[in-house]
Structure formats: structure tokens, C-alpha cells
Image (cartoon, rainbow over all chains, first blue to last red; front, side):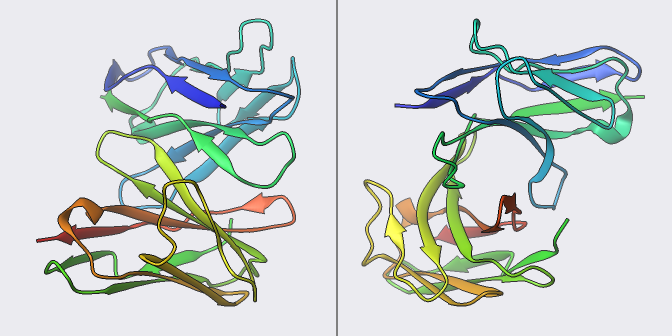
Length: 113
Length: 113
């Protein structure tokens, strides 16, 4: 079945460091891929998404490219801020667009000043 | 994004009691409601999907008689954990959805003693 694997955290970085959070997936068909962010005490928020191969999603300085050849959707940011500290979830949407999401286990990012 | 609330945010109950969790989408009409469960250090797992006015569809391994879902209106859904046991202790998250938009509640932490 479909699945998502994220790198384990926590990831601790200094402010302005480069961030990569790896995400790989297993799926049939052509699913959409998402990154969600969860700040402390809040619900998950959509950070970015890509709906087809080679699409690049971007938002708030974060980017991720849908790589079908490597079945990956790694999240990157060139210079992190303390306010980026949160839990990041990679997710896979069904090819039939039912709205169901399959999540990775989440990666905690802590950015220190 | 939409404002989604869950009540209560935390609940502790004795084994054998029932607990009702409310999910309200305050400025968004959810034609579909997803309920997820998250165990510590694990990913969100979809429990069930409900469309407004219809019976919920449960994922494999989720007992429909134990987790009662009501989606009475486009802005309110409830999840009732009946005869709760310690293994039901988890973080429950609702996700209202409509027309390619999907949001998440802040979650409810259930602890069953």
C-alpha cells in the first residue's frame, strides 16, 4: 500500500542554517504530495504542495520538488529562523483525490538563535 | 485558512466511560470530515471519513461501534469514544474538507486511566 517515510528528528539547527528534511514515498498512480507544519498548540497547516512530477511547491522560503524517479519530496529552506521551529509532516494524497492523506511520522525542527 | 476548533483540548477519564470530542469549523463549511488519531512519535492515522448527513466510512481495523462519528451539519462533527480503555489514549485530530480545501483542528489529547 501507499506509505510515506520521513527522516527521524529532532533536527536542531542554528539560525540562518540550511534545512533539509527528507521524505520518500511509495505509491501507485500519481498522488499529490504535501508538506504540513504544526506549531506548538495549533493544528496542522498546509505549507506547500505539488500535484505532479517535477512540480516545485514553495511557500515562506520553503521548497520541495516532486521527484518521481527517486520517489522523493524533500523539504528545503536556505536560511531557517527561530520562528520555523515546529513539527513538519510529509503527506501523500490519494490518486483519486478523495481527500484522504497518508502522513509520515513527523520531524521536529528546533532552531536556536 | 479556516478556523477549526476542537473541544475539549485535553480530557482524562476513567476506563469504561465514554468521551465526546467536538470539532467545529467556524468559518468553513465542511462537506467531508476526516478524523485522525496520532500515537506518540507516530504519524497521523486516518480513522474514518464522514460526509455531512451520511454514515461514516471507517478504515480497516477501526471499530465503528467504539468510535461513533456524527456529522450533523457542515460546521460540526463529533467523535465519541465509547467505553474507553487505556489503549484508546491518543491524540485525536479532526480535518474538515471541502472542494479541494482541507484544514485541521488543534487536536484533543485523550488519556484513559
